[in-house]
Image (spheres, each protein chain N blue to C red):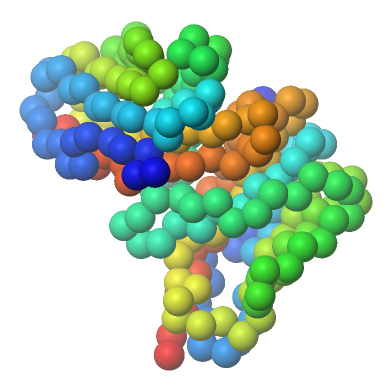
Length: 111
Length: 114
């Protein structure tokens, strides 16, 4: 079945440093979504990428979808303590109904 | 809208007991998903419904687990009998896939089986 791998599992940064998490799929994806889960909370949708090579920005967050539609990345510029949480990528194969979630990258930001 | 509603938020039960988790999706959403989250296995899809019909239950771990969606505004996930390895956070999510594929998650039910 489809597998989605995420690295790193965990990253601890100082406030103001940049952060990147990477996502790789065993199969070509029709789309990829990113979610954020705060400690003790539930996953919250951030963005969806559909096109090969697509790049989207949300303030300090930059999302990329690889040319082969098998990998993706999330980059946060100048992290803030409010960025703390676990970031998940989730991919969908043919059709859009279901998502396969990566294990997530836990981000800790020290002030 | 109040978002996806789940109850109870916390459940502690003894091994062998029946557990029923409840979910009310966002009104108008046509897909409903049940997930289980653990440290070891991450976020796993258990089953999903489209227009109240179960589409894929291949993620349900075993026959002790069952899910129903009797109408568009209510779904249940039942575990009978429960075992300690069922301890996890169970999330319900819904989406409206005619316009968007993002999933809206409920707050989750933290289940502890002793």
